[in-house]
Image (cartoon, rainbow, N blue to C red; front, top):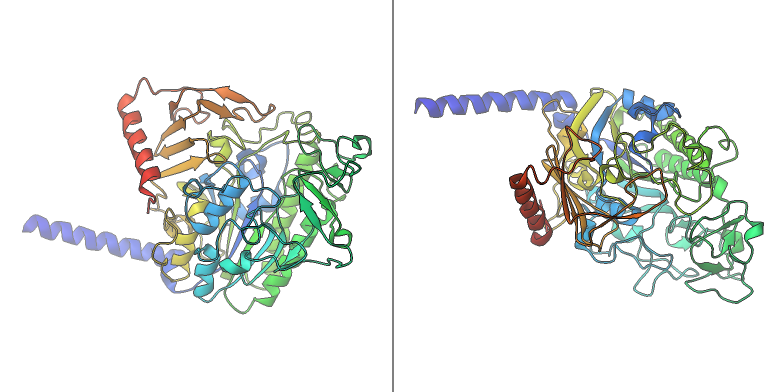
Length: 518
Protein backbone atom coordinates (compact mmCIF):
# COMPACT_ATOMS: atom_id res chain seq x y z
CA UNK A 1 0.00 0.00 0.00
CA UNK A 2 2.82 2.37 0.92
CA UNK A 3 4.57 1.73 -2.42
CA UNK A 4 1.31 2.30 -4.27
CA UNK A 5 0.83 5.68 -2.55
CA UNK A 6 4.40 6.68 -3.36
CA UNK A 7 3.96 5.76 -7.02
CA UNK A 8 0.63 7.60 -7.19
CA UNK A 9 2.15 10.71 -5.62
CA UNK A 10 5.08 10.61 -8.01
CA UNK A 11 2.74 10.29 -10.99
CA UNK A 12 0.60 13.20 -9.78
CA UNK A 13 3.72 15.34 -9.29
CA UNK A 14 4.98 14.46 -12.76
CA UNK A 15 1.57 15.33 -14.21
CA UNK A 16 1.61 18.72 -12.47
CA UNK A 17 5.10 19.47 -13.77
CA UNK A 18 4.19 18.47 -17.34
CA UNK A 19 0.95 20.47 -17.19
CA UNK A 20 2.93 23.52 -16.11
CA UNK A 21 5.37 23.02 -18.97
CA UNK A 22 2.55 22.67 -21.47
CA UNK A 23 0.94 25.85 -20.18
CA UNK A 24 4.26 27.67 -20.47
CA UNK A 25 4.62 26.58 -24.08
CA UNK A 26 1.14 27.80 -24.95
CA UNK A 27 -0.45 24.41 -25.75
CA UNK A 28 -2.75 24.39 -22.74
CA UNK A 29 -3.58 28.09 -22.84
CA UNK A 30 -6.56 27.47 -25.08
CA UNK A 31 -5.11 29.69 -27.80
CA UNK A 32 -5.35 28.16 -31.25
CA UNK A 33 -2.59 29.31 -33.60
CA UNK A 34 -2.88 30.13 -37.23
CA UNK A 35 -0.68 27.61 -39.06
CA UNK A 36 1.61 28.28 -42.02
CA UNK A 37 3.51 25.33 -43.49
CA UNK A 38 6.37 26.43 -45.76
CA UNK A 39 7.52 23.42 -47.78
CA UNK A 40 10.62 23.73 -49.94
CA UNK A 41 11.22 21.37 -52.85
CA UNK A 42 14.46 19.33 -52.90
CA UNK A 43 16.10 21.44 -50.17
CA UNK A 44 18.84 19.51 -48.39
CA UNK A 45 19.72 19.52 -44.70
CA UNK A 46 23.00 21.25 -45.50
CA UNK A 47 21.54 23.83 -47.90
CA UNK A 48 20.81 26.39 -45.16
CA UNK A 49 23.32 28.29 -43.10
CA UNK A 50 21.64 27.60 -39.76
CA UNK A 51 22.41 23.93 -40.41
CA UNK A 52 26.05 24.64 -41.11
CA UNK A 53 26.23 25.75 -44.75
CA UNK A 54 29.18 28.07 -45.30
CA UNK A 55 29.11 28.53 -49.08
CA UNK A 56 25.66 30.12 -49.08
CA UNK A 57 23.80 32.34 -46.61
CA UNK A 58 20.08 32.01 -45.83
CA UNK A 59 19.42 34.90 -43.41
CA UNK A 60 15.64 34.69 -43.37
CA UNK A 61 15.61 30.97 -42.63
CA UNK A 62 18.30 31.61 -40.01
CA UNK A 63 16.10 34.24 -38.42
CA UNK A 64 13.18 31.81 -38.33
CA UNK A 65 15.44 29.28 -36.60
CA UNK A 66 16.74 31.84 -34.11
CA UNK A 67 13.17 32.71 -33.11
CA UNK A 68 11.97 29.11 -32.94
CA UNK A 69 13.10 25.51 -32.69
CA UNK A 70 15.57 24.05 -35.17
CA UNK A 71 15.27 20.28 -35.34
CA UNK A 72 18.34 18.18 -36.07
CA UNK A 73 16.18 15.10 -36.68
CA UNK A 74 13.39 16.60 -38.78
CA UNK A 75 12.13 14.38 -41.58
CA UNK A 76 9.79 14.07 -44.50
CA UNK A 77 8.38 10.57 -44.97
CA UNK A 78 9.61 9.91 -48.52
CA UNK A 79 12.54 10.92 -50.68
CA UNK A 80 10.40 12.14 -53.59
CA UNK A 81 7.73 14.80 -53.81
CA UNK A 82 4.34 13.17 -54.51
CA UNK A 83 4.53 10.53 -51.74
CA UNK A 84 5.74 13.06 -49.15
CA UNK A 85 2.92 15.47 -50.06
CA UNK A 86 0.39 12.66 -49.93
CA UNK A 87 1.64 11.56 -46.50
CA UNK A 88 1.84 15.11 -45.16
CA UNK A 89 -1.75 15.91 -46.10
CA UNK A 90 -3.33 12.55 -45.20
CA UNK A 91 -1.19 11.51 -42.22
CA UNK A 92 -0.83 8.05 -43.79
CA UNK A 93 2.32 6.50 -45.23
CA UNK A 94 2.20 6.72 -49.03
CA UNK A 95 3.41 3.13 -49.45
CA UNK A 96 -0.02 2.06 -48.19
CA UNK A 97 -1.69 3.51 -51.30
CA UNK A 98 -0.68 2.34 -54.80
CA UNK A 99 -0.26 5.12 -57.31
CA UNK A 100 1.46 7.62 -55.03
CA UNK A 101 4.77 7.66 -56.89
CA UNK A 102 5.87 10.75 -58.81
CA UNK A 103 2.69 11.84 -60.59
CA UNK A 104 2.72 12.28 -64.41
CA UNK A 105 1.19 15.42 -65.99
CA UNK A 106 -2.09 13.64 -66.73
CA UNK A 107 -2.56 12.03 -63.29
CA UNK A 108 -6.07 12.08 -61.78
CA UNK A 109 -6.57 13.25 -58.21
CA UNK A 110 -4.55 10.92 -55.98
CA UNK A 111 -6.26 11.98 -52.74
CA UNK A 112 -9.93 11.14 -53.18
CA UNK A 113 -12.72 13.41 -51.90
CA UNK A 114 -13.70 11.09 -49.05
CA UNK A 115 -10.17 11.25 -47.55
CA UNK A 116 -9.58 13.23 -44.38
CA UNK A 117 -6.64 15.60 -44.68
CA UNK A 118 -4.88 18.23 -42.60
CA UNK A 119 -6.99 20.78 -44.47
CA UNK A 120 -10.35 19.06 -43.87
CA UNK A 121 -9.55 18.46 -40.19
CA UNK A 122 -8.66 22.11 -39.64
CA UNK A 123 -11.57 23.34 -41.76
CA UNK A 124 -13.98 21.33 -39.61
CA UNK A 125 -12.32 22.97 -36.59
CA UNK A 126 -13.20 26.42 -37.93
CA UNK A 127 -10.05 27.30 -39.87
CA UNK A 128 -9.92 28.99 -43.26
CA UNK A 129 -7.71 26.77 -45.41
CA UNK A 130 -5.64 27.52 -48.51
CA UNK A 131 -2.81 26.10 -50.60
CA UNK A 132 -0.53 28.17 -52.81
CA UNK A 133 2.18 26.72 -55.04
CA UNK A 134 3.16 23.31 -56.32
CA UNK A 135 0.46 20.61 -56.09
CA UNK A 136 1.68 17.48 -57.93
CA UNK A 137 -1.04 15.27 -56.48
CA UNK A 138 -3.16 14.97 -59.61
CA UNK A 139 -6.40 16.67 -60.59
CA UNK A 140 -9.75 15.47 -61.86
CA UNK A 141 -11.53 12.14 -62.02
CA UNK A 142 -10.29 8.81 -63.29
CA UNK A 143 -9.83 10.23 -66.81
CA UNK A 144 -7.38 12.78 -65.45
CA UNK A 145 -7.44 16.58 -65.72
CA UNK A 146 -9.99 18.14 -68.06
CA UNK A 147 -7.88 21.21 -68.65
CA UNK A 148 -10.51 23.24 -70.49
CA UNK A 149 -13.28 22.45 -68.04
CA UNK A 150 -13.59 22.21 -64.26
CA UNK A 151 -10.57 20.58 -62.65
CA UNK A 152 -12.25 18.56 -59.94
CA UNK A 153 -11.82 16.76 -57.71
CA UNK A 154 -8.79 18.61 -56.43
CA UNK A 155 -7.74 20.54 -53.32
CA UNK A 156 -11.22 22.03 -52.78
CA UNK A 157 -12.69 18.55 -52.48
CA UNK A 158 -10.31 17.51 -49.68
CA UNK A 159 -10.68 20.44 -47.32
CA UNK A 160 -9.09 23.51 -48.88
CA UNK A 161 -11.29 26.59 -49.23
CA UNK A 162 -9.08 27.99 -51.98
CA UNK A 163 -6.08 27.06 -54.07
CA UNK A 164 -3.68 28.74 -56.47
CA UNK A 165 -1.54 26.05 -58.01
CA UNK A 166 1.24 24.90 -60.23
CA UNK A 167 -0.76 21.77 -61.12
CA UNK A 168 2.08 19.27 -61.54
CA UNK A 169 5.75 20.14 -61.11
CA UNK A 170 7.49 22.56 -63.39
CA UNK A 171 9.67 20.08 -65.25
CA UNK A 172 6.38 18.49 -66.34
CA UNK A 173 3.80 20.16 -68.56
CA UNK A 174 1.68 22.32 -68.63
CA UNK A 175 3.11 25.67 -67.47
CA UNK A 176 -0.18 27.22 -66.34
CA UNK A 177 -1.74 28.33 -63.06
CA UNK A 178 -4.84 26.66 -61.66
CA UNK A 179 -7.06 28.82 -59.46
CA UNK A 180 -9.66 26.79 -57.60
CA UNK A 181 -11.29 24.67 -60.35
CA UNK A 182 -10.02 26.40 -63.48
CA UNK A 183 -6.89 27.13 -65.48
CA UNK A 184 -6.32 30.84 -64.97
CA UNK A 185 -6.64 33.14 -68.03
CA UNK A 186 -7.42 30.27 -70.39
CA UNK A 187 -8.78 31.47 -73.74
CA UNK A 188 -11.56 29.15 -75.01
CA UNK A 189 -10.44 29.95 -78.55
CA UNK A 190 -7.01 28.46 -77.75
CA UNK A 191 -7.80 25.25 -75.85
CA UNK A 192 -5.14 23.50 -73.83
CA UNK A 193 -4.15 19.96 -74.80
CA UNK A 194 -1.84 17.80 -72.68
CA UNK A 195 -0.64 14.32 -73.60
CA UNK A 196 2.07 11.70 -73.30
CA UNK A 197 2.88 11.56 -77.04
CA UNK A 198 3.93 14.26 -79.46
CA UNK A 199 0.87 15.73 -81.20
CA UNK A 200 2.70 15.90 -84.53
CA UNK A 201 6.13 15.28 -86.11
CA UNK A 202 6.57 19.04 -86.42
CA UNK A 203 5.95 19.72 -82.72
CA UNK A 204 9.10 21.47 -81.33
CA UNK A 205 10.91 19.53 -78.62
CA UNK A 206 14.18 19.53 -76.76
CA UNK A 207 15.81 17.16 -79.25
CA UNK A 208 14.75 18.65 -82.57
CA UNK A 209 15.11 22.26 -81.35
CA UNK A 210 17.88 21.83 -78.80
CA UNK A 211 19.89 24.78 -80.12
CA UNK A 212 17.03 27.14 -79.19
CA UNK A 213 17.07 26.23 -75.48
CA UNK A 214 18.20 28.76 -72.87
CA UNK A 215 18.56 25.91 -70.34
CA UNK A 216 19.83 22.65 -71.83
CA UNK A 217 18.80 19.22 -70.58
CA UNK A 218 21.14 16.46 -69.40
CA UNK A 219 18.72 13.53 -69.33
CA UNK A 220 15.01 13.28 -70.06
CA UNK A 221 13.23 16.63 -69.97
CA UNK A 222 13.39 16.94 -73.75
CA UNK A 223 9.76 17.12 -74.85
CA UNK A 224 7.67 20.30 -75.27
CA UNK A 225 9.57 23.59 -75.09
CA UNK A 226 8.19 26.58 -73.19
CA UNK A 227 10.13 29.69 -72.20
CA UNK A 228 13.28 28.23 -73.73
CA UNK A 229 13.13 25.12 -71.50
CA UNK A 230 12.06 21.65 -72.59
CA UNK A 231 9.94 19.56 -70.21
CA UNK A 232 8.54 16.10 -69.57
CA UNK A 233 5.36 15.57 -71.60
CA UNK A 234 3.61 17.37 -74.42
CA UNK A 235 1.12 20.20 -74.68
CA UNK A 236 -0.30 22.69 -77.12
CA UNK A 237 -2.53 25.75 -76.83
CA UNK A 238 -3.35 27.73 -73.71
CA UNK A 239 -0.84 30.43 -74.65
CA UNK A 240 -2.58 33.23 -72.74
CA UNK A 241 -2.55 31.08 -69.60
CA UNK A 242 1.14 30.18 -69.66
CA UNK A 243 3.46 31.65 -67.05
CA UNK A 244 7.13 32.60 -67.10
CA UNK A 245 9.33 30.39 -64.89
CA UNK A 246 11.13 33.41 -63.45
CA UNK A 247 7.89 34.77 -61.98
CA UNK A 248 6.76 31.76 -59.95
CA UNK A 249 8.09 32.78 -56.54
CA UNK A 250 6.71 36.30 -56.82
CA UNK A 251 3.28 34.91 -57.71
CA UNK A 252 3.33 32.53 -54.73
CA UNK A 253 4.07 35.42 -52.37
CA UNK A 254 1.41 37.64 -53.98
CA UNK A 255 -1.30 35.00 -53.59
CA UNK A 256 -0.18 33.97 -50.11
CA UNK A 257 -0.32 37.56 -48.93
CA UNK A 258 -3.81 37.86 -50.35
CA UNK A 259 -4.90 34.76 -48.43
CA UNK A 260 -3.36 35.90 -45.14
CA UNK A 261 -4.80 39.39 -45.43
CA UNK A 262 -8.24 38.05 -46.28
CA UNK A 263 -8.31 35.74 -43.24
CA UNK A 264 -6.31 37.79 -40.74
CA UNK A 265 -9.27 38.01 -38.34
CA UNK A 266 -9.98 34.26 -38.16
CA UNK A 267 -7.92 31.11 -37.66
CA UNK A 268 -6.27 30.06 -40.91
CA UNK A 269 -4.09 27.30 -42.33
CA UNK A 270 -1.87 28.11 -45.30
CA UNK A 271 0.16 25.48 -47.12
CA UNK A 272 2.88 27.46 -48.93
CA UNK A 273 4.24 24.90 -51.38
CA UNK A 274 7.32 26.37 -53.04
CA UNK A 275 8.74 25.06 -56.30
CA UNK A 276 12.25 26.18 -55.33
CA UNK A 277 14.71 24.50 -55.59
CA UNK A 278 13.31 21.87 -57.97
CA UNK A 279 14.35 21.75 -61.62
CA UNK A 280 14.15 23.55 -63.93
CA UNK A 281 15.93 26.04 -61.72
CA UNK A 282 15.08 29.39 -63.23
CA UNK A 283 14.73 31.94 -60.41
CA UNK A 284 13.81 35.56 -61.03
CA UNK A 285 16.51 37.62 -62.72
CA UNK A 286 17.20 39.55 -59.51
CA UNK A 287 18.52 36.31 -57.94
CA UNK A 288 20.42 34.94 -60.93
CA UNK A 289 24.17 35.00 -60.36
CA UNK A 290 23.81 36.08 -56.72
CA UNK A 291 25.22 32.85 -55.28
CA UNK A 292 28.42 31.11 -56.28
CA UNK A 293 26.61 27.78 -56.62
CA UNK A 294 24.93 28.39 -59.97
CA UNK A 295 21.18 28.40 -60.55
CA UNK A 296 20.65 25.88 -57.77
CA UNK A 297 22.22 28.23 -55.24
CA UNK A 298 20.35 31.18 -56.72
CA UNK A 299 17.09 29.25 -56.23
CA UNK A 300 17.96 28.66 -52.57
CA UNK A 301 18.35 32.43 -52.20
CA UNK A 302 14.95 32.92 -53.84
CA UNK A 303 13.34 30.44 -51.45
CA UNK A 304 14.99 32.18 -48.50
CA UNK A 305 13.56 35.48 -49.77
CA UNK A 306 10.08 33.89 -49.81
CA UNK A 307 10.48 32.91 -46.17
CA UNK A 308 11.42 36.48 -45.33
CA UNK A 309 8.45 37.89 -47.24
CA UNK A 310 6.01 35.63 -45.39
CA UNK A 311 7.49 36.56 -42.01
CA UNK A 312 7.31 40.25 -42.95
CA UNK A 313 3.62 39.84 -43.83
CA UNK A 314 2.89 38.23 -40.47
CA UNK A 315 4.77 41.04 -38.72
CA UNK A 316 2.98 43.74 -40.73
CA UNK A 317 -0.42 42.31 -39.84
CA UNK A 318 0.54 41.72 -36.17
CA UNK A 319 0.06 37.98 -36.63
CA UNK A 320 3.52 36.65 -35.69
CA UNK A 321 2.45 35.89 -32.11
CA UNK A 322 -0.74 34.24 -33.35
CA UNK A 323 0.85 32.02 -36.00
CA UNK A 324 2.78 28.76 -35.91
CA UNK A 325 5.20 28.66 -38.84
CA UNK A 326 6.69 25.31 -39.86
CA UNK A 327 9.48 25.13 -42.43
CA UNK A 328 10.32 21.79 -44.04
CA UNK A 329 11.18 20.18 -47.37
CA UNK A 330 9.47 17.47 -49.38
CA UNK A 331 12.71 15.49 -49.76
CA UNK A 332 16.45 15.82 -49.73
CA UNK A 333 18.73 17.34 -52.36
CA UNK A 334 19.72 16.38 -55.87
CA UNK A 335 22.21 18.19 -58.08
CA UNK A 336 21.87 17.03 -61.68
CA UNK A 337 18.18 16.18 -61.96
CA UNK A 338 17.87 16.54 -65.71
CA UNK A 339 19.19 19.98 -66.66
CA UNK A 340 22.65 21.43 -67.30
CA UNK A 341 22.42 24.20 -64.71
CA UNK A 342 25.98 23.90 -63.30
CA UNK A 343 24.79 22.50 -59.96
CA UNK A 344 27.52 19.86 -60.11
CA UNK A 345 30.23 22.02 -61.64
CA UNK A 346 29.85 24.83 -59.08
CA UNK A 347 29.23 22.74 -55.95
CA UNK A 348 32.71 23.49 -54.55
CA UNK A 349 32.88 22.89 -50.81
CA UNK A 350 29.10 23.00 -50.39
CA UNK A 351 27.46 19.79 -49.16
CA UNK A 352 23.75 19.90 -49.87
CA UNK A 353 22.97 17.00 -47.54
CA UNK A 354 25.28 18.18 -44.78
CA UNK A 355 27.05 15.25 -43.14
CA UNK A 356 24.42 12.82 -44.38
CA UNK A 357 24.76 10.35 -47.23
CA UNK A 358 22.29 10.22 -50.09
CA UNK A 359 19.61 12.61 -51.27
CA UNK A 360 16.46 12.66 -53.35
CA UNK A 361 15.33 9.13 -54.38
CA UNK A 362 17.31 7.59 -51.49
CA UNK A 363 16.40 6.19 -48.06
CA UNK A 364 19.79 7.14 -46.70
CA UNK A 365 19.43 9.99 -44.22
CA UNK A 366 20.15 12.63 -46.85
CA UNK A 367 16.98 11.65 -48.69
CA UNK A 368 14.54 12.37 -45.88
CA UNK A 369 16.32 14.29 -43.11
CA UNK A 370 15.84 17.92 -44.12
CA UNK A 371 15.68 21.42 -42.66
CA UNK A 372 12.82 21.48 -40.13
CA UNK A 373 12.01 24.59 -38.08
CA UNK A 374 9.00 25.66 -36.02
CA UNK A 375 8.29 29.17 -34.77
CA UNK A 376 5.41 30.61 -32.76
CA UNK A 377 6.63 33.88 -31.30
CA UNK A 378 5.85 34.27 -27.62
CA UNK A 379 4.90 30.60 -27.29
CA UNK A 380 7.92 28.60 -28.43
CA UNK A 381 11.16 28.98 -26.52
CA UNK A 382 13.94 29.31 -29.13
CA UNK A 383 16.46 26.49 -29.20
CA UNK A 384 17.64 23.32 -30.89
CA UNK A 385 15.92 19.93 -30.53
CA UNK A 386 17.07 16.42 -31.38
CA UNK A 387 13.51 15.04 -31.14
CA UNK A 388 12.47 12.96 -34.15
CA UNK A 389 9.68 14.82 -35.96
CA UNK A 390 8.16 14.26 -39.39
CA UNK A 391 5.83 15.97 -41.84
CA UNK A 392 3.49 12.96 -41.65
CA UNK A 393 2.64 14.05 -38.09
CA UNK A 394 1.13 17.38 -39.09
CA UNK A 395 -2.40 15.94 -39.15
CA UNK A 396 -2.44 14.69 -35.55
CA UNK A 397 -0.28 17.52 -34.20
CA UNK A 398 -2.24 20.35 -35.83
CA UNK A 399 -5.51 18.74 -34.76
CA UNK A 400 -4.27 18.80 -31.16
CA UNK A 401 -3.21 22.43 -31.45
CA UNK A 402 -6.59 23.30 -32.94
CA UNK A 403 -8.36 21.56 -30.05
CA UNK A 404 -10.02 18.89 -32.17
CA UNK A 405 -9.80 15.13 -32.46
CA UNK A 406 -8.74 13.11 -35.47
CA UNK A 407 -11.74 11.53 -37.21
CA UNK A 408 -12.16 7.79 -36.80
CA UNK A 409 -10.07 5.88 -39.31
CA UNK A 410 -8.14 8.95 -40.49
CA UNK A 411 -4.41 9.63 -40.56
CA UNK A 412 -3.30 6.07 -39.90
CA UNK A 413 0.34 6.89 -39.23
CA UNK A 414 0.24 10.44 -37.85
CA UNK A 415 1.36 10.97 -34.27
CA UNK A 416 0.55 13.92 -32.01
CA UNK A 417 3.94 15.59 -31.67
CA UNK A 418 2.55 18.96 -30.66
CA UNK A 419 4.76 18.95 -27.54
CA UNK A 420 7.87 18.50 -29.66
CA UNK A 421 6.73 21.01 -32.29
CA UNK A 422 6.27 23.59 -29.54
CA UNK A 423 9.72 22.86 -28.19
CA UNK A 424 8.64 21.11 -25.01
CA UNK A 425 11.80 20.38 -22.98
CA UNK A 426 10.67 16.83 -22.17
CA UNK A 427 9.16 16.07 -25.59
CA UNK A 428 11.02 13.18 -27.17
CA UNK A 429 9.24 13.11 -30.52
CA UNK A 430 8.79 9.85 -32.38
CA UNK A 431 10.09 6.52 -31.16
CA UNK A 432 10.44 5.28 -34.73
CA UNK A 433 9.86 6.35 -38.32
CA UNK A 434 9.51 4.55 -41.65
CA UNK A 435 11.10 6.22 -44.67
CA UNK A 436 10.48 5.26 -48.29
CA UNK A 437 11.78 6.15 -51.70
CA UNK A 438 9.37 6.80 -54.57
CA UNK A 439 7.43 3.67 -53.59
CA UNK A 440 6.68 0.35 -55.21
CA UNK A 441 10.22 -1.02 -55.00
CA UNK A 442 10.24 -2.50 -51.50
CA UNK A 443 12.85 0.03 -50.39
CA UNK A 444 12.52 1.33 -46.85
CA UNK A 445 14.52 3.03 -44.16
CA UNK A 446 13.44 2.42 -40.57
CA UNK A 447 14.81 4.56 -37.78
CA UNK A 448 14.28 3.55 -34.18
CA UNK A 449 16.21 5.62 -31.67
CA UNK A 450 19.86 5.62 -32.72
CA UNK A 451 19.44 2.65 -35.04
CA UNK A 452 18.62 2.78 -38.76
CA UNK A 453 17.64 -0.32 -40.73
CA UNK A 454 17.74 -0.28 -44.53
CA UNK A 455 15.64 -2.73 -46.53
CA UNK A 456 16.15 -3.19 -50.28
CA UNK A 457 13.98 -5.95 -51.72
CA UNK A 458 15.54 -5.30 -55.13
CA UNK A 459 19.02 -5.09 -53.59
CA UNK A 460 19.77 -1.78 -55.29
CA UNK A 461 20.01 1.74 -53.84
CA UNK A 462 19.62 4.96 -55.84
CA UNK A 463 21.42 8.28 -55.38
CA UNK A 464 23.72 7.12 -52.62
CA UNK A 465 26.10 10.04 -53.26
CA UNK A 466 24.20 13.23 -54.01
CA UNK A 467 27.16 15.15 -55.43
CA UNK A 468 27.44 12.77 -58.38
CA UNK A 469 25.01 11.76 -61.08
CA UNK A 470 22.20 9.45 -60.03
CA UNK A 471 23.31 5.83 -59.91
CA UNK A 472 21.86 2.47 -58.92
CA UNK A 473 24.26 0.87 -56.46
CA UNK A 474 24.17 -2.86 -55.56
CA UNK A 475 23.49 -3.32 -51.84
CA UNK A 476 22.52 -6.16 -49.48
CA UNK A 477 18.82 -6.59 -48.79
CA UNK A 478 19.32 -5.40 -45.21
CA UNK A 479 21.83 -3.05 -43.63
CA UNK A 480 22.02 -1.61 -40.12
CA UNK A 481 23.63 1.66 -39.02
CA UNK A 482 24.27 3.32 -35.67
CA UNK A 483 23.35 6.94 -36.38
CA UNK A 484 24.92 8.24 -33.18
CA UNK A 485 28.32 6.84 -34.04
CA UNK A 486 27.92 6.95 -37.81
CA UNK A 487 25.45 9.64 -39.03
CA UNK A 488 26.81 9.32 -42.57
CA UNK A 489 25.77 5.62 -42.66
CA UNK A 490 29.16 4.41 -43.86
CA UNK A 491 29.56 1.33 -41.66
CA UNK A 492 27.04 -1.49 -41.91
CA UNK A 493 27.00 -3.10 -38.44
CA UNK A 494 24.31 -5.71 -39.03
CA UNK A 495 26.78 -8.56 -38.42
CA UNK A 496 27.76 -7.10 -35.04
CA UNK A 497 24.17 -6.53 -33.87
CA UNK A 498 22.03 -9.40 -35.21
CA UNK A 499 19.50 -9.14 -32.38
CA UNK A 500 18.88 -5.45 -33.05
CA UNK A 501 18.46 -6.17 -36.77
CA UNK A 502 16.09 -9.08 -36.13
CA UNK A 503 13.90 -6.97 -33.84
CA UNK A 504 13.80 -4.02 -36.27
CA UNK A 505 13.02 -6.26 -39.25
CA UNK A 506 10.02 -7.64 -37.37
CA UNK A 507 8.86 -4.15 -36.32
CA UNK A 508 9.13 -2.78 -39.85
CA UNK A 509 7.26 -5.74 -41.29
CA UNK A 510 4.51 -5.33 -38.70
CA UNK A 511 4.08 -1.62 -39.48
CA UNK A 512 3.83 -2.37 -43.21
CA UNK A 513 1.46 -5.32 -42.85
CA UNK A 514 -0.77 -3.97 -40.07
CA UNK A 515 -2.05 -1.16 -42.28
CA UNK A 516 -1.49 1.51 -39.64
CA UNK A 517 0.99 2.48 -36.96
CA UNK A 518 -1.11 4.84 -34.85
